[in-house]
Length: 124
Image (cartoon, rainbow, N blue to C red; front, side, top):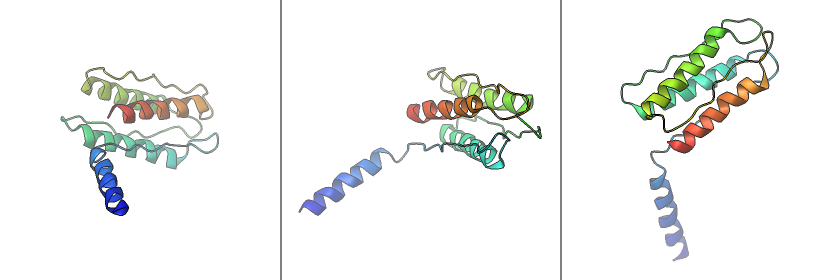
């Protein structure tokens, strides 16, 4: 009897979260831009785009700097978060993320992006 109740409870929990979006934490290992970090960020944006639908188009962001973060990459990241905020009628506030260093990837930049994804995941 307990196992049947447990299975029913588990089924209810899974059905409640069936439409929840799960965004990955995106680490950047070291001081240079890692392709894994960029891939993870773009995957999260793709997941959000699929979840929101509504004709929202989020760009795939690519870093063009060989050392740190290019301004084009920064702009792309922030533009995507801005589009998401617009799609959600500004119900979620996203931090503007910029890299503090010209020659390496700052922890603050990586953390800012991950905090924005955390806020978004909680909202969706």
